Length: 387
Image 1 (cartoon, rainbow, N blue to C red):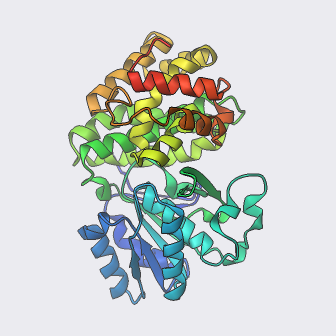
Image 2: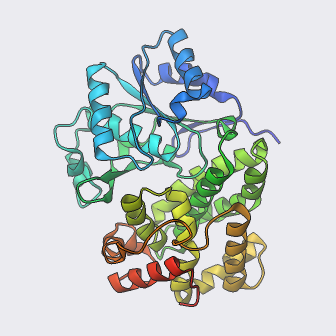
């Protein structure tokens, strides 16, 4: 199968094994001469980042590195990166890594030229319209995990440390101008991170599919994204060198981020505050919470589950789908409960309030109240699926 392609939807996408070598040309085509490469501190030590920096320098690009960011990037990380961007006279960002690096890189490119504080541009009401679109720097995205799909997103999820909240910063021009999706960059990802990232992509598709909004385009993309994850994730976890599985997971991650224009739901509503308070891996948190939210939503999604399972080749509708979810979680090493995941219940009331107020809550198929969010958290904490 030929897994090399150039796509123009939803932005320019350069897809295929080994295509990261095209990075210097892509940067120049975007009109960038002094890029700031943003990645996480762990990845900064890997040869893939060092090679990317060397290739850019050899091509005459005045590139610099910023890697001072957390797994759940904070406002401080973004402000610090924007300071480096401005002081270095940079004119674009290479966001290189998983969701944390991609989100932080996009936020740096966005905020560096603005006059207000970051939180003034939160995706609430007209927040994004306050920004000066003319000074938003271009971003080249290079994903190294197959999960968040942030490479094709127009937003960044950033933790506001003062309130321990995950905030969504949005602007249409935050969409990267070009994405280099090279599955070879995901080969070294450990099985546990492959599993967490892969199920993050699946949850994006699942919640988008179940969201009670009218968006047939996204719904169709969500269906195929779930099929790709179902077929490819077990192989990607068991054999990290399986390039076809890695390629299918990488494209499924992008599809999930495209699909959730339709909306997300209570899996993310709970995962966001849990991640903000406990600094957990976002995709794995989604994977832990997923079946408990499915049980809560059952009355509203059973008909859709019939169509989904027919497409995925799973028998017995909702019950068959739930059985498959539990099986794949066991197969790829997802803890069954939040307690087993290392979370304590000391913040249950705070998490419930934050979940009900999360911007993903309104598109959950069943209305998510504070009390309902608390019940789901307690069930997920105890590992109790008979809610």
